[in-house]
View 1 (cartoon, rainbow, N blue to C red):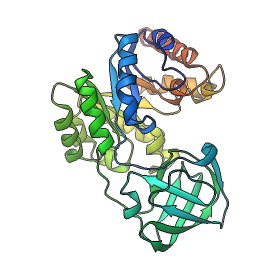
View 2 (tube, rainbow, N blue to C red; view 1 turned 180 degrees about the vertical axis):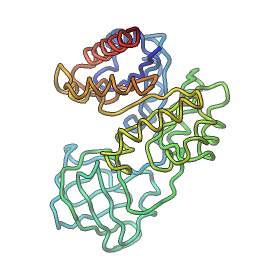
View 3 (cartoon, rainbow, N blue to C red; view 1 turned 90 degrees about the horizontal axis):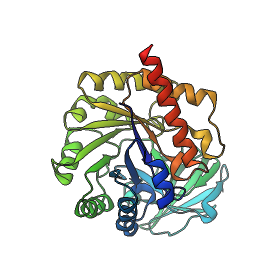
View 4 (cartoon, helix red, strand yellow; view 1 turned 60 degrees about the vertical axis):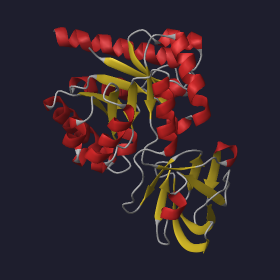
Length: 327
């Protein structure tokens, strides 16, 4: 059986749409990276009132993201100077800040930060004081709000943020049983997550960095299943290696009898348009042929213009794949 994980967001977080998306859906996902803690209880309640499909809480995990940017999109021009603030509420063309709260204290002079999948790259050139750093734009680009950041050296971040922990406690009280663990990197991280959610919960570990790939066997041991997040993984693994890496991960997981879900860019074109590209539909079928047991829709259903049609397309592709298997 092919399982679907559907991410809910502004485009789909209403009772009518949820009911249209529920048929054949394994779980509805709430992505904590894009939801404030105070909204978590009301979102869980809304989903639970609209459907019997289980809710899944997807943690922020060990990642750095920039905070809100003015008008949601800001152009960083090459060679311009940018101030990095510890406490800035909203960024602009000359100012930026990051979370989690301790991110600022991790940064050092000489660090380079790639923001929003290489949209822009900045280098820290000076410490102004304990609340501000100065950086130079090495490669210009447009930066959105709440985008992932890569730093040019290994850093240690808490695998479970304070927000994650509080959200998990809220979810458990509301009888949520499914939890997706972002940036699972090693056995100790997964054990920590397992201890927090409890043995009666379903733990889906997300493989989205090199450490996660390297330590896959240890992660599988303490996880019920895994998600390959190809987007974040491609920030550390060259994009031309992603198809091979995906095949390797699925193969290794199958040997341990653990299901693999695949996420990112499945039907990206349908965020804006009514139909996917030919490359996208081929990718979905190829992913299933590799042995993936599930598919994850993210932006397509959370913020896309056609969430219902997108799920309909995935359903059609799953039916087509099942026909291939029978022949």
